Length: 92
Image (tube, rainbow, N blue to C red):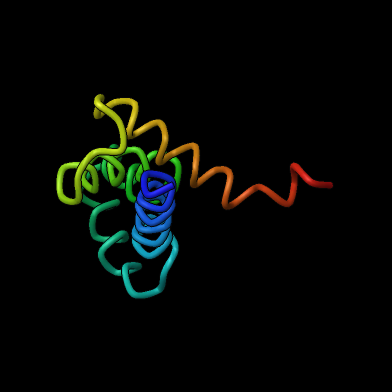
């Protein structure tokens, strides 16, 4: 049960970081500056699913991994963001 709670806290941390960076007005000037500098990074910082993958890897490195594989952690983070964001579409 402890691992489940860690996974949920980790997933919500990734979700929060991703939404703040890719959607919030606080980071809009930074996103705009990055978009002018690089198309690739501009897309990365504007796409929640793309950013959540890399945020998941960074969170795993800082807080501890969810699995034994960083790539899988990135997939879990991206998948959990998708689930938290689009779960209503699944239910309807």
